Length: 305
Ligand SMILES: NC(=O)c1ccc[n+]([C@@H]2O[C@H](COP(=O)([O-])OP(=O)(O)OC[C@H]3O[C@@H](n4cnc5c(N)ncnc54)[C@H](OP(=O)(O)O)[C@@H]3O)[C@@H](O)[C@H]2O)c1
Image (cartoon, rainbow, N blue to C red; front, side):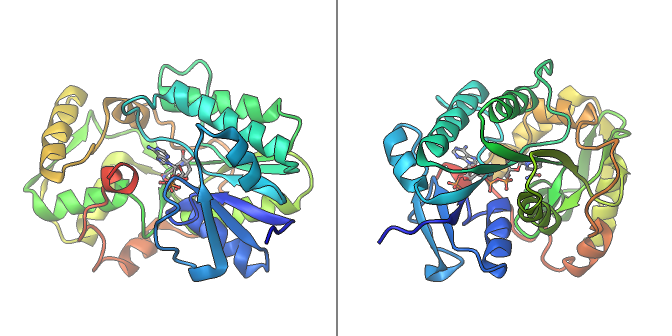
């Protein structure tokens, strides 16, 4: 049976998309997910049906979006792999956008990142800026939300910092560690995504947490939380990258790319605009101190295996 006026959410079985889907369900919306893993067990049972996010079949994408009032788009890649470069991810997002237009979707709520720029040498931030331009030029109503570093139960970076701190005697901080991060809780991101839609206008908003830390401070707070005695060493970025590659062999994952180190060090995960999130990192770390970093969060397992 086909339904209409539902909300379509990419990746509702995983991280940010999952929280957005939960907020939409809580507000009485019907939700469908478009995902690269439609066979994955739904955390929502039969309340959220899954349809393929297959960029090679735009007609199928259009069918899957037909009847959606709003598309909540979280699709992006963390790093290039195989044929999927950042340029390919931009093209994939344009394919999704065009499918949404053909399907009669009225609005896109798009999860971007702080400080996207077409002038950025970093593919992640450059590609995000290109996607924003495509959305703004699409003719659809839009709400673009730009989170900093997102934390929550399923996050990768903060959890994996804790994982390394729990297991190894030394933790390498690239450079002086004096660059800033302003983590925002995934619930705050989801709330902004859902409430932005209700505003009617097209908007672009940073989505930022209440506290700003240097990266070095962040690592030390996590170390204290998990009672790690690791020596936190400031090392040249190239050494940090080399060590992250070695760690990747242990974890069978891409731990941190060189571009991610450069992005962190460029202080791009912070905003000049007022904070929007209310949930602070440190109480969350305390609440989750027993489970934080117990299990490695693998990007390869999530998206490639
Ligand atoms: N996590 C952060 O700290 C953070 C910070 C700022 C901005 N953001 C942005 O927030 C959005 C959601 O991030 P998230 O961390 O919550 O991501 P996620 O849930 O892991 O993935 C979001 C969507 O992208 C798809 N995807 C991810 N990697 C892919 C790959 N390699 N190949 C194909 N599809 C892939 C997922 O596919 P499936 O449906 O198959 O799972 C899902 O539909 C992204 O646009 C990201 O740029 C995240």
